[in-house]
Structures are given as structure tokens and as C-alpha cells.
Image (cartoon, rainbow, N blue to C red):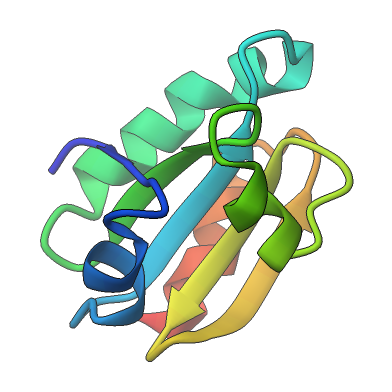
Length: 106
């Protein structure tokens, strides 16, 4: 499954009502570390297809969502399970570090 663009309009359906955990990537087009982690997040989306949903939240386009999660640095990665944040990481992470965040919640 590929990454899903998360907006205020689809947030409840795609994230809060998801039957699988969701990895949310808060990012921006001007953010260097966000560009570095993007291919890693895309790989995670493919490898965990069917077991994990991966959503991308552009903080410039979705400031209300970013504020609701108190995002102050990007990239910020949150794992949401059953409507609750169960894990998070701020800044660039290697693939094995991301897998270590995701695996315990599957």
C-alpha cells in the first residue's frame, strides 16, 4: 500500500477509524531531513502493506492537524493505534530505527 495524503477532511476516516496502526509522517517541502526520510517511509509503507497504514501530513497545508499533535519539529513520526499515539520519533531515522518503532505495535 502506498502512502496516503492525510488532511483534516480524511483524518478521522483514515487515521482514527483505521483497523490497522497508522504511521503519520509530519513533513514540509522545504525540510531537508524530511526529504531524506521520505524514501525510508515509502519503503516502510510497501513492506508493511496490509498491516500498517502510512499517512503523510504536510504541516504547511494542514496547520490545524499539526497543532493538534503539538508538532514543533519536523519530521515528526507518530504511530497511532486505536485512536491513540503509541510511539513517536522526531528527526531523521534510519530504516531499522523506524521498524523498531513500528514492530511492537503490530
